[in-house]
Length: 103
Image (tube, rainbow, N blue to C red):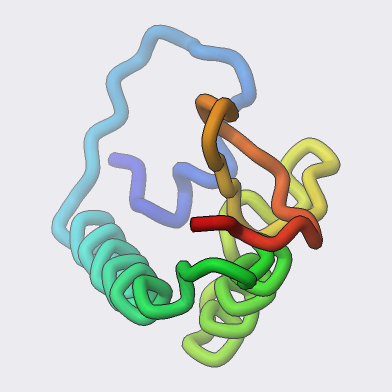
């Protein structure tokens, strides 16, 4: 049985195997989801005209560090940000930058 933490060391290629998680793995996933929800709740008031997505990204990083968590996107295949921020015409995986949000 694979634990939630073992999943991080899983092969990069899909082996076709179904991973089975035990109670310990589900407890870890619940903890990660609860922390993510708290981070998103605290982000809501920050999303306003004039705020940059870089500022939002910095908050995500600091929130994670303050709670003993490392953002999953950070350093993933060379990605240097803690979040993806997609605005307007960017469909997904937008890279945070210093351009301020507009109304």
